[in-house]
Image 1 (spheres, rainbow, N blue to C red):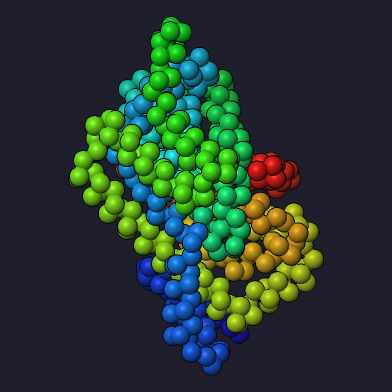
Image 2 (image 1 turned 90 degrees about the vertical axis):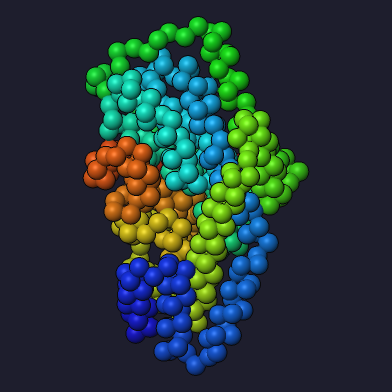
Length: 427
């Protein structure tokens, strides 16, 4: 009975447009109030305080601030000028800048929507002006922008680590190889489309002398140094994720200052956006942790576990069921909300099935990436729509082939989990 009350409460509260964090708290309060005689207010107060004062969360607002500062710099323009001379000879030509630029910027941003918006405001007008197929340009940007959820410093991986008590540093290491491989898979799809239909891209890009190509690399140096500073300091053992985030904020300020865009107005905008985003994620985290405790009191994870066990699903079949479940859920919820709402139930199932918690974190973030490009609530679709003025349905259809690429890649890392676990095992 309790599980049906919880499901009904979730449908009603989440469907009422109430904030996700408050909805999660409300679901827990309703369940405990009906089925358990206990001081819910005291439990809620203690749980919210303990969850929001977790040391691991210190890195979250700092990485958000770093991304917001970089969003207001000219890094996207520098990425385009630095990468475009090197991809013009490939089938797909400058479409690869969408993917490579998003991959590199994601390593300094940590946000899917910010990555798509920052890269897209430079690449989409250029690609349109040069005669590239608009559908392929929009789809590659929407999908590659989602790499901001996977490549460290990923905000969603930090949230997952806090909720499951898994090392954030290990999760960051686990996201690097899959992030790079997924970007390569997207580029391979663009190459295949261009080979099969050369009319999707201009006949040829102007030949650029090697001297100019080498000179263009200088445009990539600031972002490259920032990525090395943030990620390298963590894996070299010189800094914790929180300390690396502080260095990232400092590095972003240096870049903004060097580009002469560092103003009081920029700082106010960046801090304001960071506070808003951090507050939203903090409320969702508080609600998720309280809901997890409420579900444990109601024995719902144990009931669901017993139900799944009675179905005698193999580990691979369990992953396939969860994959379908999350793809459907991703059509209606953003990645962070989707993950924190379901983890209390799905995480014990995965651990009992013998899967590594670090691997499952990367798998979940990959599924969240897929949700970022699925209508009607795919955030990256809205970002690309805002940049292009295209209809949301057209953007969704443009992103569909890349959704299939992500789906196949999710099954690939399920069959070959060492793709995810290799780097964490040696760091």
